[in-house]
Picture (tube, one colour):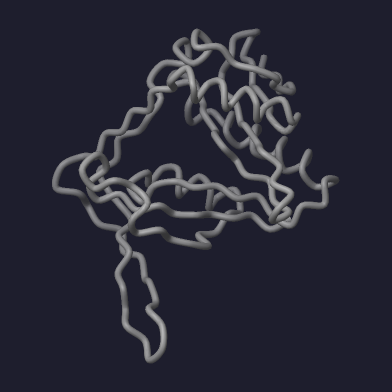
Length: 183
């Protein structure tokens, strides 16, 4: 039985028990600059990659500490399947721009594609509405096609692109997509 509950902290063991934290993609959303009379406009083309993109995230002790500090704000939730951590979403309220930033959404490798991410997102959206923030925001990669598709299905839209956020040595071909959900 799946239950969603507030999340106040995570340990390194919690993260490890969730299995592979990452993705494999055979496609990428490629931004194509199209010169306009005054500005540069982007179009996005879904392309098949010559070799699949595999990405794995490892959470350092410092990153885990920072995530736990964000969770202390009270805008984070966990999904438990029969008492075992199946996923979590971490939200950070940002007063300076009146938004709630989704720092991380992770579903255990064995639990993906079962609606857990949707339930976590719905819980966060319901929690966020009374806060009177203007939108939810997050950042993902153009190569994480499954994530982009998931967020679009949840009602998010690409609202920005950062062509040079990622180091091309460590993340070749990756472009940051900023996505927002208006409340």
